[in-house]
Image 1 (cartoon, each protein chain N blue to C red):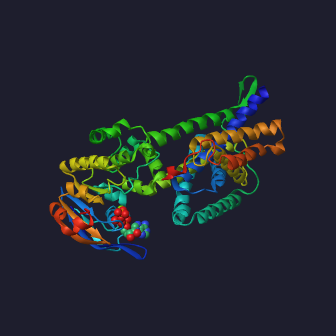
Image 2 (image 1 turned 135 degrees about the vertical axis):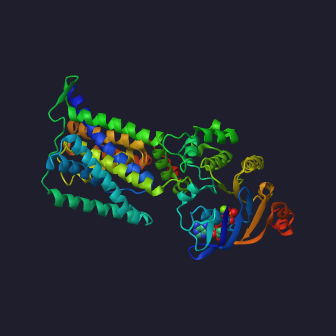
Image 3 (image 1 turned 45 degrees about the vertical axis):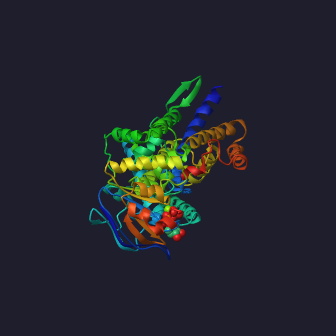
Length: 291
Length: 235
Ligand SMILES: Nc1ncnc2c1ncn2[C@@H]1O[C@H](COP(=O)(O)OP(=O)(O)OP(=O)(O)O)[C@@H](O)[C@H]1O
Ligand SMILES: [Mg+2]
């Protein structure tokens, strides 16, 4: 039982990271219609922003975390200007290839900057464990779950209780009508990219101490985040959360109770099942909502 | 208040407006009538800055609008209830309305008074205030589109076929509200295929055909005009 509790919390923590990556992905997709294939690399950048600020620059962790997230926000804005704006009127395929290409560039940039040797990002709660039902839970894993829960609450408040967030939803639904409301569409789209980058950054910072920080970590994360959004429902925020948690849980529980060779099998099998049987996912959002 | 001068607007190679000139004075209600494809929507979109102008000009309060962005035109006081209503489907009625306050509302300012005014005008919207946009009936969506435009505190209101797709009684009700809004002093440019309704609220009117103004005059005169009666009033 203690084993199960430990695995369950660790699975929730890993799932939270996938959920954050998936939320960032969904925010960009609903606001701009862009399927961002560089989403996994955004998370990798988040981890390495943490490595740069905490391990390399030696900043105390609150300052280092803030600096890393600020850098991620700036990166989101840069991505908006350099990648999204020039491609915005291009056919979908071009935009997809564009994000794939930028993802490769990001990976190589990280390789140049940090080398292929994996880093360890130390958690501020390193070595602390909490006893829950006889199981020794890493305080970091517990923190990941709590932080993700708080973030989900904040995101909900932003989108449903602030003029800014309502404006972002409006732009996602009908750009021209949003213009007629006097909304500055480009500013809101830039904010969507920045928000996605910051969420990916938080995912990366939280993931760093759980995995090794490795410049190739982006691809597996992207795959899990895609699986999460497909299972949860493409374009749905609740779906991204539920899907992320599901993928994280099956990964850790599967590795332990089935075989570590098959740990990803369940999540991807479920994803394929959804694609075949219920392509709109659990929370299937109606496509028409994009106006 | 608003004037267009020899306005030319084209979609790629096909010209939709061939030099349209019109003039709207403060407080006037103007009807713009014409058949399908005459260019009515194109003209309203150009005024709101959604379609680029090829040549000619649009002046608002004597100031040329040039290539001013749509959202800045809204701030100047030009609001539009567009063709097809374009209500935000995934936003509630109240969220749709509150978005309309974007051009003037700053931190801490309440939209409550404006909201009340729109709810007084369209009580149905108050009953439906927490319903999502897509779930409204066509008439309710039209009321929402007009109410949302009013939330911007506009000085010029552009309405694109507010009667489109509505049952006759509902269309009359919507026009009754438009008459009320006009009586309160707002300047209105209303585009319509339903010529009877539009000329009944308007002071003056323009008839658009194939991208050209072919006739203009006082609404009462247009109603009596033989060509209008034959082409648009069906008698
Ligand atoms: N997006 C577009 N691309 C190309 N041509 C267009 C576009 N929109 C309109 N047109 C053309 O421009 C002309 C004017 O269209 P517009 O929509 O302004 O007419 P309208 O008077 O509003 O008609 P309706 O009463 O049917 O709404 C038409 O010939 C139409 O086919
Ligand atoms: Mg039209």
